[in-house]
Length: 217
Length: 217
DNA sequence: TAGATTGTTAATCGATTAACAATC
DNA sequence: TAGATTGTTAATCGATTAACAATC
Image (cartoon, rainbow over all chains, first blue to last red; front, side, top):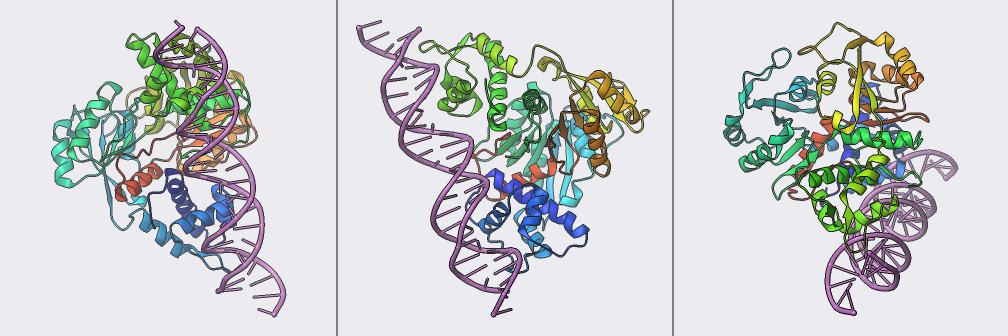
């Protein structure tokens, strides 16, 4: 485990991990690079190369032991502890994420939802309490929160983002349809549905079938 | 305008387009490649190269005329007509997308939402009617729908995806946490929040600040 | 042992950037 | 005209793939 490594490699590792969970579920104990490659949609060379970048090794005759592989990968993603995440903006999208059940198996926990209007409650009551936005900064500091999902409207996104940064947030998943720039202390990943739909529109129109617009990269 | 071109280029073009809307909003009429590059976070060379790949030209002294640029880019993304999109799965996430107001300015229209339980209605009533899933295939065929957003639970994702394909869907934005493979006739882009959070967790932990985990590519 | 698979190096491929001639 | 910016080619950079020696 060294250097920085780029996002493409890291997200492939995450996908290997998820594929390995599925293989293990199916009763497999060992796996070869070509099987894993097939499942994730990359080449066997790619799999072995990615692993070797992180000093993850297998057995020259018997492939990789799934449990050991998963142990290493989980270590890489800090799965030995709960990752606390806050959601900022309790609209429909924020609310959807706060109810999402898939986080727990990844050791991710939504610990709070913030909104200017804390009485706001779209849909049924959340399991996670909605708190006033004014308490966000002190919460981030006192709880040592590093990660946030930003689901506020476009017009306040930049302002709220700045508050998150100054409170000490280190990583933000931005769903407001405006690009936010990463800083020295905080990495942002922006997701934009319109943009994704537009690229689909382009490729569909060009008549590209089969070729993957597969993501992450 | 030629060949296939890869997803990275296409999504940059979409981001140029959005940046240009903002510049125009601010009253600009012309723009140089370095300004646009700065705004989108790429190099000026990249901007000019991307444009030249699609035969989009400017003026050697006066840069690019924003209106003309936008005309070309809108043409690329078929903005001369409404893009009809269906949402499959009326849970919280599907519901959030069906209420999202940002689609219309991109000429994207959510024309229907499907769910096994059409009486299901999370949150307030949708503007878009929720229809029984059993009607999806005939709807896709009769309306000539090409694009869909898949927001069903993981366990039925593959099955529903197959139905969409056989009905003639050409592009799918998949939000079920399971990788779906593109086929000859249909391109899928899978988005997985957990994966995105995991990559953030990795980079945050490695202490990477400033370096962008900027997306799309 | 013989055969199969890894780990890694070298080759290839593609995308980004730099540079500069053309030109407005 | 002189100066600045494009459009494009060539150089660089990085990521993917192929190949194969090591070895279980």
